[in-house]
Image (cartoon, rainbow, N blue to C red):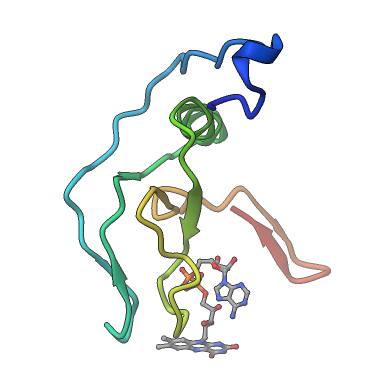
Length: 106
Ligand SMILES: Cc1cc2nc3c(=O)[nH]c(=O)nc-3n(C[C@H](O)[C@H](O)[C@H](O)COP(=O)(O)OP(=O)(O)OC[C@H]3O[C@@H](n4cnc5c(N)ncnc54)[C@H](O)[C@@H]3O)c2cc1C
């Protein structure tokens, strides 16, 4: 059940994804060492927080689980899934640099 609440119990209907960020299908994703791989149902490349919200709404609608891939450097299958995969390659903009504490926001 998309909303997590059975409709026969009076739960709300699942939200209709508003933006519908298109995703990629038939992708074969590997980790850096190519020791693990997966074939997600859909791979998304959001570039804004709104697009991430959109992916999560789509996942809720389809009762799909979501994993987030960073650089795929982890020597494990921790980020892999056969459901929805979010790649963060589009989150590559430097927003702020705080020199005093040596930190950046992206
Ligand atoms: C070539 C190479 C060089 C590296 N150099 C360094 C280094 O210099 N210093 C260092 O500390 N590490 C190093 N690592 C290890 C790497 O930083 C870690 O494996 C890190 O977790 C990978 O992050 P990611 O964003 O690529 O994760 P992904 O594999 O893309 O996974 C996605 C998400 O899963 C989560 N995740 C991943 N691994 C773990 C974990 N073990 N536990 C909990 N959550 C996790 C994170 O939230 C991550 O964003 C290196 C790995 C490689 C392959």
